[in-house]
Amino acid sequence: MTDTPITHAGFAAIIGAPNAGKSTLTNRLVGTKVAIVTHKVQTTRFPVRGVAQVDGTQIVLVDTPGIFAAKRRLDRAMVKAAWSGADDADAIVHLIDASAWVAERENWVDGAQKKSLEDDRRVIEQLKQSGRKALLALNKIDLFPHDQVLPIIAELNETGVYEEVFMISAENGEGVEALEKALAKRMPESPALYPPDQIADLPMRLLAAEVTREKLMLRLHQELPYQLMVETEAWEEKKDGSVRVQQVVVVGRENHKSMVLGKGGAAIKDVGRKAREELSEMLGRKVHLFLFVKVDERWQERRESYQGLGLEFDV
Image 1 (cartoon, one colour):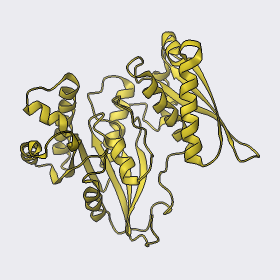
Image 2 (cartoon, rainbow, N blue to C red):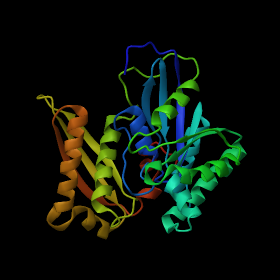
Image 3 (cartoon, helix red, strand yellow):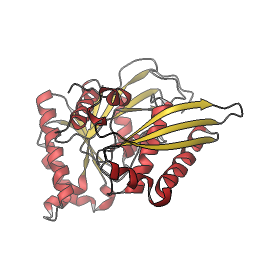
Image 4 (tube, helix red, strand yellow):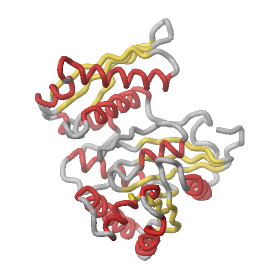
């Protein structure tokens, strides 16, 4: 952040297929972590607003859930949230995993990449129907020679839905500054929407729950489906400046509970330790984190589950 007065401010939505790198790009633009990042798809469940500043311009970044073929209620709510974030934005970034498109041209595309390509093309069709123009950001270009992406740029430009094209690596920052400057130019004249020292509008209780959910995802890998939820049940400020946080991990099946707990409670202890360390660093004070696990087979069908995530239930 700088002391430069804010004269322009607006919203920029980052949309794309699951696991395209949207959360990584949001965190890179903001300069710190405001969205959880794992290797599993569909990690982001609700739009997370990160706040970036470029000279006198404030960019409020909406990291939307991945856009994919939605069948279940939770999936439909996530996709609705993604498009709502785009509809309300002053600028849209369509983030594409360029490595999947390169793989398709080289005829060695795998199942996950094929699904990513289908999702990308679904987004393109939606952009055509909406009449909105987007900035195209081809991500993960550090994984292959740049000349391999030139035919892909030509192919995507022919769709007519993109204003500009950027080749980036959200992971290492390559090309991200140019994208950020392009977003800044599209922000309308406005005073700051958020205080200059604020990096996100996500409530701390919700961010704390997301940190724990990220650690669960990383620990469990493919053992447990992504349909688990973490709720911060209690947040108690202590006299010594520390904070006591109590969270519950909600899973849909009894056998999932044993996976989360691990042998002798080893898994949940490891998750708790890592989440506590990250929260302590984020808050700059000691955190006492207590985790509990419960089974609720119908949590995805309960309206209150969606209200806590900022998602629409009736989708």
